[in-house]
Length: 72
Length: 145
Image (cartoon, each protein chain N blue to C red):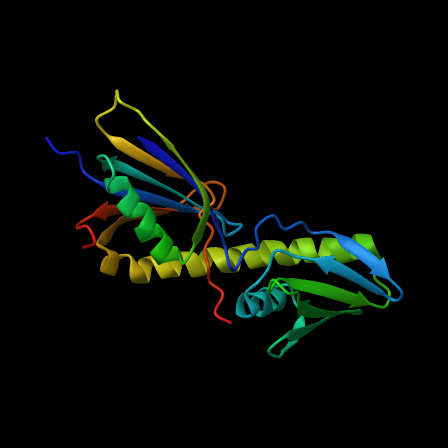
């Protein structure tokens, strides 16, 4: 059975954003990072990858996905 | 496998600290704000009368005036003149920062609502948490090619 893929985004009152993907297998989670960067016009300044061989589901935690809403 | 990310905002300057420095009759307070439109809106939310130009925004509260200018990184700094000490200037900018954060939050949520469907994400739920954050859950309908 294929896990349902979801992306959860939490936009804090101070404008910072955290995001998480669930149900994404393997390198597919990287696609969602790119999607979030595009959606938020955010720039990744650092990232860390951790292998978790005991879990079928891949989970991506994104901290401080900071939005680019600068229009000028 | 998990991935953690830190992304730098254009609207929110990374590693920004609200701090004041006094010089002559001016007290300058640094900010984390970069978006002029959101800054002007936040200023109005704090009750300021705002005059904005391309690279300068003037704000007038009761008895307090401040001129906002950009630094080389595009981050706005507030220059207070007159009877405002450093403590008061920082307090004003902290209140402004709270208002600015809410403007950024609203802009991000609106952007997600509008742009997520084109990215193959269907909004399933949107809730406001106890700490006033907006939590949005999207179902992945398709991957980008």
